[in-house]
Image: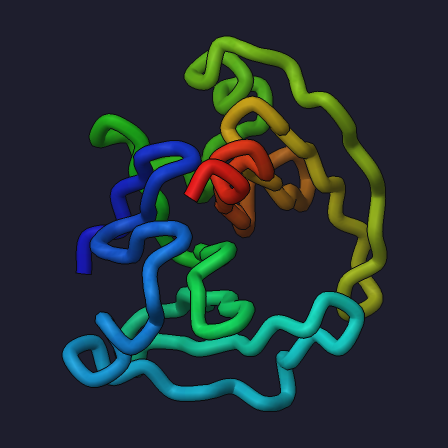
Length: 140
């Protein structure tokens, strides 16, 4: 599947705010109960063939996590140095933090304007979590 990103709107065919039932069967989405987030109440699904997570609240897609591929205007973002990502996005992150993930430190850069978190290890992007702004969610 092509994991192209249109910031705040969609990743691949999955549109933020869309009903998960529109995708569940066609894309063979499996519930991943061990990744359920009790703190925010989101369920987590994944397509059988891709290392992607689809985060759902009240059956509505709220966030997508990409771990192998995410394209922006044809450019692969996973694996890029974070400095290059900043150039591509044309902005600096609003926040960044260092978190321990499986006994390793990863730095997380949050870009609020495009509602994305870029997780890096050794200054290279290893995962990206995309969503939509709260204003867009409220406008529905």
